[in-house]
Amino acid sequence: MTLELIIALPVWLIVLAATIEFGFFIANLQQLEMASRIGALAASETNPLPNAGSIPGNITGAIDDQLETAGLEQCHVFLEHNVNGPAVTLEDGGPCTCSPPDPVELPFPTEGEYVRVTVCVEMTEMTPNLLKVFGLDLSGRMVSHASTYRHEGP
Image 1: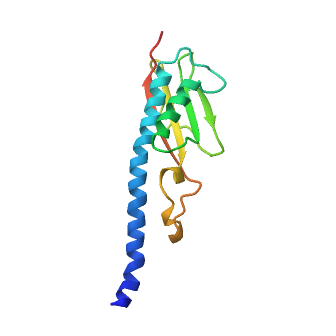
Image 2: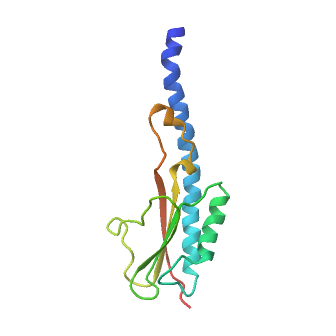
Image 3: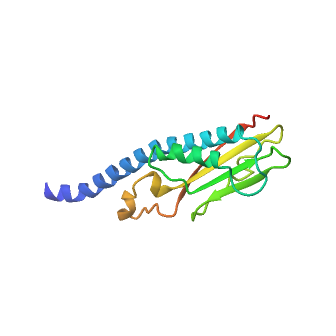
């Protein structure tokens, strides 16, 4: 009986830790998706959108407010838009390494005026790093979500 417990206990602990991490990740991924949508909505209603510089405060504020409800903190935000001509990318970021969506995987619309907001969050913000003990360290990994909205012109 004791030998069976010694053999089975680590397996059960790994399964339990993985279940907890996955549950937190899925719950917080919904918050990240909502923050991206709220940021894109705020950007779609912002006139005029800058072609250079930083992202307007009302957009990053809306994203931060949404993430704050889940106890998350954004690491990097990208705003892509083609409102004033060709597509431009603005960014507002911290120390993390993150990039906007690959244009091949997620092309930017060419017809009409659009905005796309990408929000990046560190994986350790999304879920506890419980499996680090077993060799699956989440440190340094990023999670991002992009939302595209049509720009509501003046």
